[in-house]
Image (cartoon, rainbow, N blue to C red; front, side):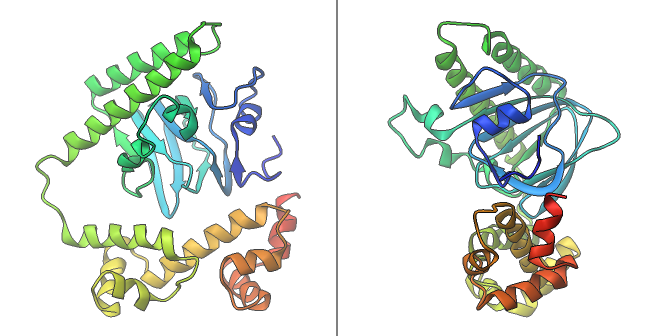
Length: 294
């Protein structure tokens, strides 16, 4: 696959092409064992929710601003709004992947906010669950059901795939609940998480530490010290990282001019954006865009 022909947001059809699947499906996709994720250092999104059953091996994942090294067995959940990238590891991951759109899962439900209850698709600290042996057995059983229906000419394939989607969501929710039960909240970690979640929503327009400190009811100095202690990076570095990540996603969409990218990111003008980008990337936005097709 040409990794950067508008890879910034992948539809179901583009995912099918990436995983070399022929039969066209518009709302869901299952990828069986042996297929690897889209290895690219360039960030992208999809139009789907994703549930990845990492049976064994290692995966390097960056989801929004959080970098993770995940060892199987594990479940990974990623929502459409999450910017992600994958890096190849020496130990090839053995996995199965289930993608579905919100419209597909909600087709038979009256509650259009059903998926909003499950924050593990979007929250920075909820994407990964390392599994105990009995949990891995349950995941294997569910994915075996999915594998037994997808692409097998079953007359009720869509209905069953939707039911398996519900089943997976409720099992994963139970795992998260089991892990949070009885845990004492860490005030510093909670504030850091709130900062990151606020940052992913507000970085478009707000790039000062003072804005985030004010919204979190702390002083800028306290927020900066806490973020540095929790992550090794300053609050300002996290803000710059969020802006750069989005800039890279937007620059992959060649239908947008660099001036339009600058405007979407609320820079005062294209020149200011160009200086910011070059400071953090070592090349201009135009040079970066050219490097993608090289």
